[in-house]
Length: 240
Image 1 (tube, helix red, strand yellow):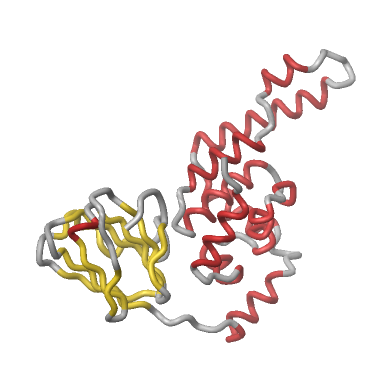
Image 2 (cartoon, helix red, strand yellow):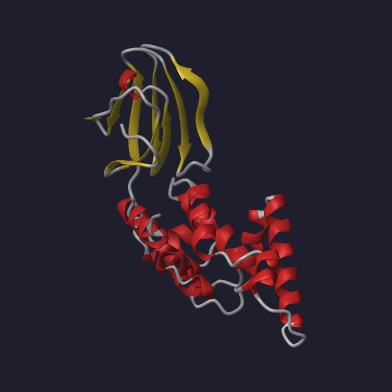
């Protein structure tokens, strides 16, 4: 068991990201991002939105979205319809409310089964667009109120042997900039971006240089990294 909100907040602060910037990348309103970090899930329209936003936010930060969904389901998800009917005595007055809850749970399960998280995020963006207090702040950021971060220049070299390598922009769901499989011994590639997500198959064979300075990597187990101008941070299980 871990604290969902605190781990999201710590990952965001390590990467020096602000809510307006994440709002642009995820299309999730800033007030909902704050609610996720504060674990105030009742602020969101329904559990369906909580799950969709939670997965999208976690993966944008380079984290395992499914891990956060499992933790939310185990701690906050209401009992299933069958369990709730078995626990509560059957009363004619409670029947309408029980039927509504059964119908809502059935809709949630059907939507999750179809995997339409992207559609839910888009719907939520439209849901609050008319009265969102964060939109003026977003416009202000677009007109130059927010500072423009500098990019990082990363050089990856297979120095001791070959290694599987994937590189994406921003997070595990970002645009792929290197996905050719193995990086052969002696082969070198360079990448320039504000934030890079790396999956390294054999870290002990890889040499990394960030803006000219060498980064310490090692180990025979695969690992995930987020690299910014300030340096690398772990993005999942394993460490380099």
